[in-house]
Image (cartoon, rainbow, N blue to C red; front, side):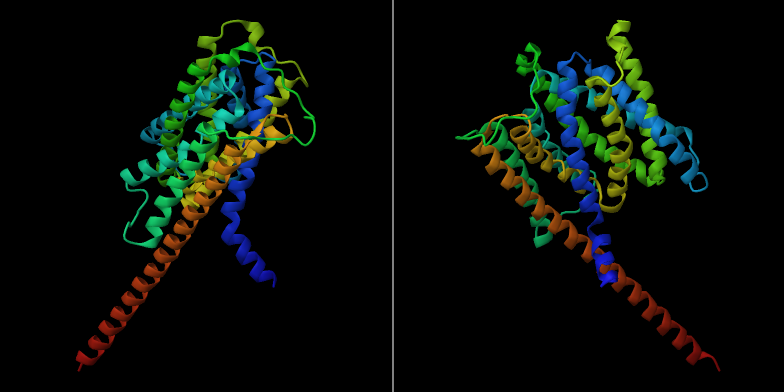
Length: 357
C-alpha cells in the first residue's frame, strides 16, 4: 500500500509542485498590488525581490552542489547573463503592467504564454508533435482550448455573479490604474519575453544541469541587473526606503521567498517535463486570481470568467494527457530498442561461438 502511494506521488509530483507554485504566484498579484498602491516602485520591487532570492538560495547552492556543479565557462556565463537579463526585463514589464491595470487583466493575458511557449518549442524542435497521433492532437487541442479560455475571461464578461459576503480585504487603487493602453502593451510584451525565457531556461539546463545553482545564478545575476536598471530609472533615495513590517516590506519578503523556492521548483519540473509542461500551468493562475479577487477583495465575478476558467482546466487536462502518453511512448520505445540491442548482441555472440573450431 505504501509503495503504491509513493509510486503515485512520484508520478504526479511535478503536477503537485506546479499547482502549489501557481497558488503562491497568484497571491503575489494581490500583495504586490497592495504595495504598489502604497507607492512602491515596480522596478525597485523587482530589484529587491531578485536580490533577496539570490541571498536566500546562495548557501543551498554552495553546499548542496559543491561537488556536482559543472565548471562555469565564459560562453556559459554569457548565456546565464542573457537568461537573467530576459528574466528581469520580463518581470519589470509584467509588474509595471500590474500597476497600470488590474490583477485579473494581467493574469488573463498571462495565459497566452503557454501558447507562445508551445509554438517556440515546436519551432526549435524541443517539443515533438505528431498530428496523426492522438497524443499530438491532444497537445494541440489542449493549447488552443486553454488559449480560448483565457480569451473568454479577458473579452467576455456576461452577467455578474452576486457577491455572497463583503470583502475582508480592501485595496485602495491609485489613479494610475486608468492607463490601460500602456498597461496592455507592457502585458503583451512581457508574455512574449516570458515564453522566450522558458525556452532559454530549458536550453541552459542541458548545459548546466545543477538545478539549485542555476536558479541561484539567475537570481544573483538578475539581481545585479535589476538594481542597475532600477537605479537608472529611479534616482530618488527616498524611493528606495522600505519601512520595516510595512506592506512594501512584506510584499518584497514574500515575493523574494517565492522567487527562491518556486524558481528552483520550476527549473526542476522543466528538467523532468520540459518547458511546455511548466508554461501550461500558468493557465491556472487566471482561475486562482479571479477566485481570490472575488472572495478576498470583493471584485465582481462574471459568468465569462467562470466559463473561461472551465476551458482553461479542460485544455490543461488535454495537454497533460498528451504529454503523459508521449513520455510513456518514449519509455516503451527505449525499452524496445534496448531489448533489440541485447538480442542482436546475443545472436552475434552465439554465431561467433559456433564459428570457432
